[in-house]
Amino acid sequence: MPTDPIPGEPLYDVLVVGAGFSGLYMLHRLRSMGLRALVLERGSAVGGTWYWNRYPGARCDVESVDYCYSFSDDLLREWTWAERYPPQQEILRYLEHVADRFDLKRDIRFGTTVTAASYHENAARWVLLTDDGHALQARFCVMATGNLSMTKPPDIPGLDRFEGEWFHTGHWPHRPVDLKNRRVAVVGTGSSGIQVITTIAPDVARIYVLQRTPNYSMPAWNRPLAPSELAATVAHYPARREACRESDAGIPLPSPTRKAVEVTAEERRRRYEEGWRRGGVPALSFAFSDMFTSEESNRYAQDFAREKITTLVEDPAVARRLSPVHHIGTKRTCVDTGYFETYNRSNVELIDLRTQPIDRISATGIRVGDRHIPLDVIVFAVGFDAITGALTAIDIQGRGGVPLRAKWSTGPRTLLGVQTAGFPNLFMVTGPGSPSVLSNMVISIEQHVDWIADCIAHLRRCGADTIEPTAEAEDRWTAQVDALAAATLYPQANSWYVGANIPGKPRTFSVYVGGCGAYRDECRRVVAEGYRGFRISRQDSAGGPPSPAAIRAAG
Ligand code: NA7
Image (cartoon, rainbow, N blue to C red; front, top):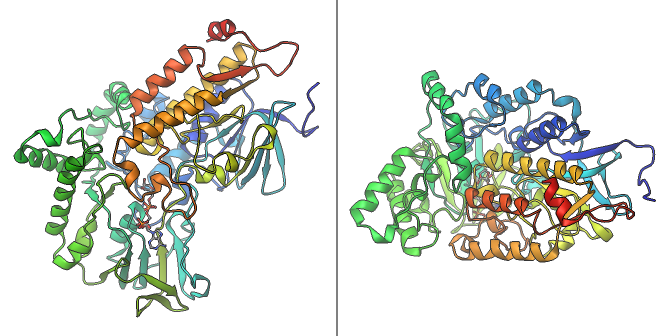
């Protein structure tokens, strides 16, 4: 007889960790299936990454009309996006609206951090522990914890003695921060740094940009969305969304078919200029099909991007220091509105940490090389423990008490990025091994949430209790993800994609680079073949495991 791990406590069908885009839609789906679900969220409101990243200038680098849910036509029609790229505040308002419109908040416990999750094999239950000392149990657990939600702490000596204010962009305060006329240093020049620098430069007394690695950044050409333009998009929305789903990156742009190495220099320039005028992350990466597989092709795009920097930045020495040298796109390409031009302002100073590293932080500023920079505020735009960080931050223990951290000590292993062997009934939304951060996250989130909800419905239909990948299927998938990445330039860069930004993190490229469409096809095939590679079983030994025929019939 199964034993109840926490007698007297309610048994949820599903516990969901996180109330961002993933957790909200997951809750909606589970509820509509008549399941008892509860979401646990560490923030005091919905929004996930958009709740925490409220630094000046925070904005999504995917167009608003594509960075939103498609599961409800009414929701789509009633929301009016104001700009081409949505600012953080607007996305947060949207998610608040979704939560209210679908009455989701009554099943979300806010201000609750999940610290541990363990699988109780005898009862086929997950028990989650929270920071306020509670234990909750459920048959299924869904980690909707996000790919960029665990901030990388600033690791510069002396910070504890700094007498000014300091902030991490990924943990920006919920009160107004007045930077007017203050001396500010920004550490980090990834997407967050680039946005914050451009936004605050006109207001602060002086800004010191502490740059370790320059980044490529494409123009956003952000603009208000005219109501007529939005209405025209919404009218053709099903086709646009379908194009996103079947595309490589989850955006409605056809993948390029021609190789840069096969065309003339004039043709390359024409395509790059066209991309630059369109703007956004894919400005150059959608010009030719071989940008991520050919050094030569990538170099053509790099040269074009560096040339643009020299035309935008007046001081040639500054332009040189701002010019990246890595393969373009292998660290996340940024999107900006006037970033490079910001260096033409007299109150902006670029400090190249490659030639003069940070020595330490003092009570009154930062020491760089032998120079002391007096400061009122330090902004750390130093990024995240990406993709796996939010999962390994929780002490997750699977079958036999095996910790996920131990299982993944040499890198994450999953089947399709939705489950990992030895952790039955634990699902990840956009986990490692799925297209995740190389795609429009909302497209990938909707697909994963639907897959997980359908999987749970399937288990119920065929009278099964548990599902987990077989070790062999997981090995095959992990090897396939590795092999696809190894054929590209991606793994070569010291990026957060490979965990290079986190000391001690195993270096693996754990994102499926085959594209959303190919990935979606594989997910469909796995289901059509009776959840190929997953082991589905019944906990009650008298019933025995459902037969393969029963599993297929239930599908
Ligand atoms: P990123 O892209 O990881 O950028 C972090 C930046 O901070 C990057 O320039 C780092 O340089 C720099 N960094 C990190 N640690 C240090 C230290 N100790 N000293 C100096 N500089 C440092 O994070 P973002 O928040 O900008 O963006 C993350 C994603 O969120 C983004 O790609 C979008 O998809 C949304 P490095 O490159 O490591 O030399």
